[in-house]
Length: 284
Ligand SMILES: [Zn+2]
Ligand SMILES: [Zn+2]
Image (cartoon, rainbow, N blue to C red; front, side, top):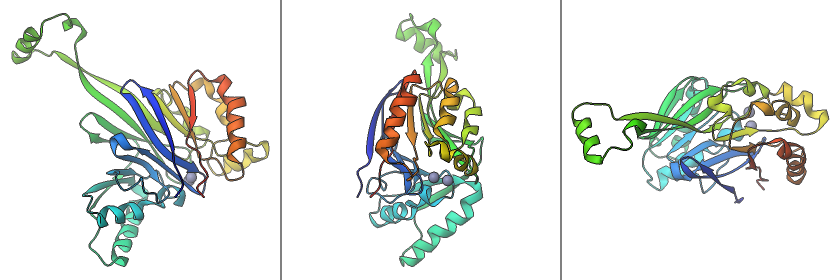
């Protein structure tokens, strides 16, 4: 079983851990173990079953090839209910696929809630986090997802008051807090350069995960045709990025990883104000 890459990213929420691997065609799997959340499940991997929420960005095999393994392992190990979130266009097919797998295994249907979502939808992940969905620039319907951290914060004007006084005011019905929200992470799934038209809630989220599939001049047209990013697209739109950590994904197998890392180091890194990381691996 391939070893996944691990990133520990400093954010205003604290250290956010990302574990994953990504290669075009072979599989993209990104886990946020602290939140029990998977962003795509393109490969079966032992790290996947503990995740209680799995998002699937689109119907391509390299993004959903691991969902039956995930559902089956959770079922066999009685790991409890879980939630699978998919774009509404593929929800009927995914429901059918999982029902077929459960039937082939001879058991009961998997204990899964299948949630179908559209661009613009927002769904709670847990009390202080929500998931928001946006369209990306791929050749089949594809949803990117954003992680938004929401919490109540004492109004700055009340900061100097003693605790009992704040409690008294709260009991009297006075509003003493305001809601703060932070765009913690945006995962842009498979996407061409159209994603750079997205707003700051995507491009200036603290952690931004984007794909870059192609790196050679001859592949420019191929990238455009299949709704993927070419390194030239990233370089052209670099001014739009407002993130603290840029995490690259999804290189084509036409490139060796070492070649990709060298190009990122030489051409992209010197132009960035943010940290540059990646979750690119060879799966075999
Ligand atoms: Zn893909
Ligand atoms: Zn795709």
